[in-house]
Image (cartoon, rainbow, N blue to C red; front, side):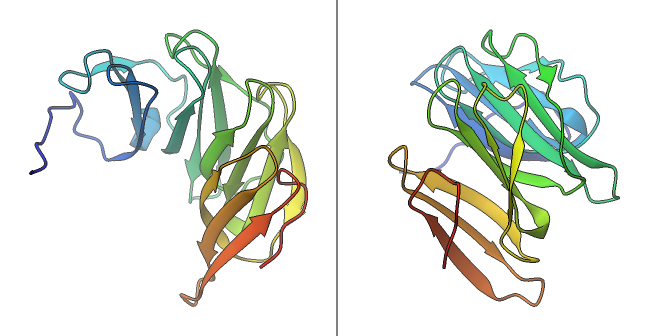
Length: 178
């Protein structure tokens, strides 16, 4: 088997993709670019995000509820977007930090986590309308987040000196340890 490049309708860098089934997917990238596919990635159509900040991650819980996060390294801060209509429209959520966000995950349509630069961990309990800082796990850049239950989570990142770390939370992202 081989990988087949698919036309994306954009010349901007893309950073993440999420499919909820064999047909429906979203991709995000630089300058607030959001693309949507309804045919399994054969074709992509642009969506209006309402931001020009770089988007580094997208996550859809189902065909309706989605979130995209990112920010710019120039100190302009983070961006958190949410959609409740399959990505047709996006609303900006309140931000609590200037650190760039790198990944987002939702357990339910209400409870989710974001991770980012400066060891930042954010948690939402209202579908991403607002976010609370869970503190910092140091000066690390947290790059990715995954989970297999509502309590067990993992995040990976690195110090800027190139030392990699894996963190675990056993309480749904409230506290983290190596």
